[in-house]
Length: 422
Image (cartoon, rainbow, N blue to C red; front, side, top):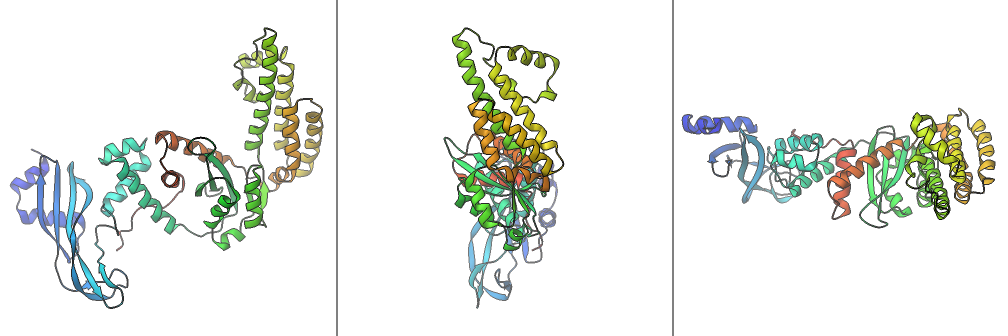
């Protein structure tokens, strides 16, 4: 016999009612009418009844009379001694001279919620702490749909409470969504380490929507934005926060140079294989390494390949040399270094490298702005990793709004717990 069953069979009903009234924190307006233990369903249903008297309008808080009673509803509550606990009540509706007929607020649940405040608060903590949503649903004994509803309500509360404190530096980045060329764009508060907003697509209009999540005061205080070379983002930044400096950092640039090296490798590999030389085959990852991180075995492997893969080795050397650009302490010295590096890249006779070099020169002002603000999209990239994990764990999303909710739930640093004050 469970402890709850023992209480049912050995305690008085009045004691049981008082027990649940205390657990639920009910005021004098509400009474426990019945407690129904359903052993086969492993659940307990707590039926509540309003004590009567004057009501309070949920809109204007004025005292008013009762109009009628809404149909009986149920709310999921925290388990009681491993029994799924359900609150059941018919809620009175107030008749207010100013606001009309309204269903009154109840002390145990939020508006339009199917869960008690205590259950929502517990569920949010479990969903945030669990290794996966699947693990959380098992612990909470809810469906995926219910888990998403809890996250959605939490995100809505969190966004309503979000502060409007000044933000000085932003990161704007893109992330693939769904199949093909579908993208979402993220805005990150770099100092606050939080995703501020997620919008569909990566167009200029989409980026404008990201800025719509900020107040005019916040936008006027933005000093710098870390972003890649995507022109749509740049156009929006110039339009929305014209005082802000556009900053390009090594995360995206390393990616562009790495892709250029790989393109050189693939072209050279095709030529070498036609001559029966397969040294470059399967070495894509090898050329993404940084020279100072190589162990002895990898260093020797690269040295051996460089004897035959001359173009790939030269491209890798140019990529590695550019990493010194970020070590300078002033933009003036970095500019001198860039001029020397650019001359070498253009003389390399490697078209993919020359293409990236020209792109970097075109956006040199954004590169040099790094030495003034020293911000990077590292945090945006870190969130991209988390977003990818969210996407993989969910096995894809049916629509963008669900994807956005999940990202903001885990990466938005929102205050999502329900308000117990009412």
